[in-house]
Length: 56
Image 1 (cartoon, one colour):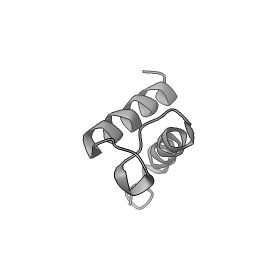
Image 2 (cartoon, helix red, strand yellow):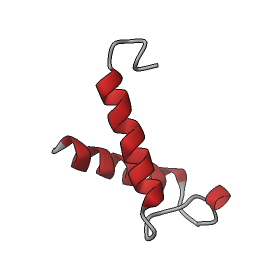
Image 3 (cartoon, one colour):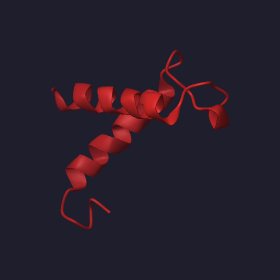
Image 4 (cartoon, helix red, strand yellow):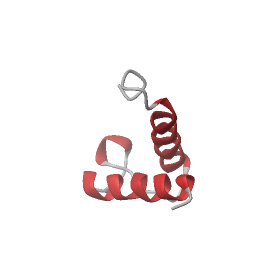
């Protein structure tokens, strides 16, 4: 969707943040992924990785 709106770089950055979160062996996991994290905790982890990747 971000590609369609002309924000492909931001879309790529979000995908990288999600991948980074899921590849972290000590990162949070929601129940469907075998963990106990809430969706808020998972979202916070993705946001933290997004900020790190963006240099914020």
